[in-house]
Image 1 (cartoon, rainbow, N blue to C red):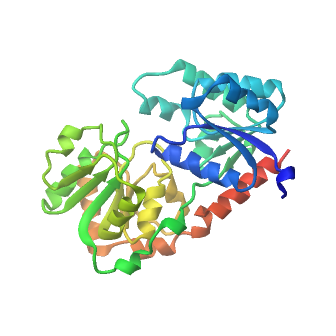
Image 2: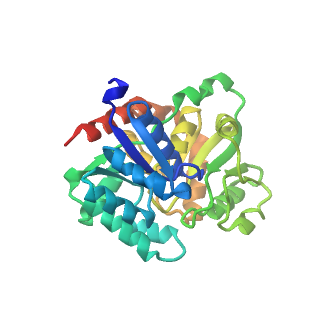
Length: 329
């Protein structure tokens, strides 16, 4: 496609918060920029002169939730622009993650779901949830997975033999993600086993810090996180809300065994899961302890690496699906 033939896309969302949502949005931005002329606007920098650029675009692509979306969608709808909405989580999950219910936010989600020509979600599980609650017709929804940036990863085999018996978790700090239960389970199992928690840790931080085997980092670069993935034995994701779990896939690729809670959407990519790979109750210390012990004895990295089609989580796959969505009438 020549530059002169490129469709112009107005992309609105959050791209710099360091959250899973922002990371997915940034990956979507990169995919779009490889094929289209993109006007990307972050909510922190929304001004009239930028929003009015919608008139010069063919498509309005919204990839985060905000009350600002109400005016943007109405403007796009009035001028008959195609609207694509990337929804990261269903409304009831948004309410659980937030301290207070935001009615304006709820209204913006409802308007987007009703006005969008196409809705993208990041998992089959989320698509089923939206369909079951009759929020959307299933035919209106397309699943587009986030992708692993393989070019930035170093193959774990290259540091074989340097792993320490330690557990790693990333991106703490959301109300529905409480690693204090994990800290307790690891300490009870083996007080000498290190537990590294990387990311803003606002939830029960005072509890987690009491365990002498826990090491907290509020922020590390991606390169530094990859080093921990290369030297840890277990990567553990303990969520009680929907999250895709791209960090888990990166950790697996870099050689970690995985223990993931039931709501981690990346689980649907595997064809050979067992019950010992999944945490069904994120607050059950005995279950966490038992399954960490199982991983210490049996491991699951080699099996899980063989049970996933890595082609499903490449940038090439994401670009292809987005192109199909945009090309549809």
